[in-house]
Image 1 (cartoon, rainbow, N blue to C red):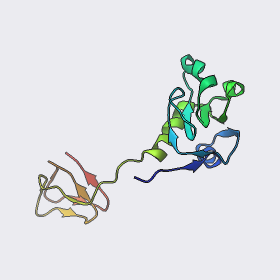
Image 2: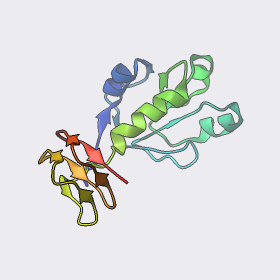
Image 3: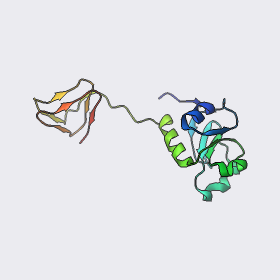
Image 4: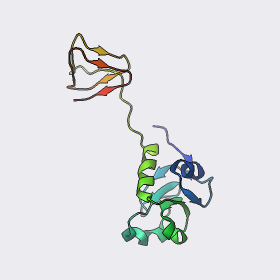
Length: 140
């Protein structure tokens, strides 16, 4: 698996966040405030975790504007830090890509049309007259 790394300035632009800090900071992963290491980004949305902000080792934290002055490291300021973190999580752990083909346990009617790039998963059923397009994934 290839390790992904992004510039904090690029992350801020994609999320529509205001950046407080160094835009050239490299971010290579996500973590909680407590577990973060340099190179990782964390978030603070729930005030009950605020006590961990001052001690985090994260290279950046996604927070709201109201607590920006309490952040000891780079910060991305968003109205909804949780949503920003959720969107960012897909950058570092993208959904797996299904391999094209028909699983041996799948049942596909002889009159069904299935694209060569489609994936028909285990125990899936494709009935007569069905058309399964390009890059479509069918599961049971």
